Length: 96
Image (cartoon, rainbow, N blue to C red; front, side, top):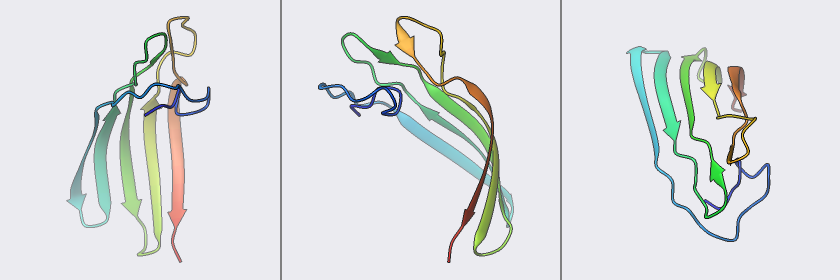
């Protein structure tokens, strides 16, 4: 990645390869519960904060998925690294 705070603060001329992992469990046929983690890329003068979320996805129909999550995308008030903060997220995806 060259992205600084997922590209919101621009892109760095250097490249950093972060770790990324995601695990989901399907306790029911139409329900997913999971955790996701992304290491923040570290450039020589700039450090992205790590990102993580816990989420629940409900496959309401074959076309509609609803997701509720809590995401933590790092500290927004630091002078040595940057993030977007944290909080609840609700998402819907509809495919045609």
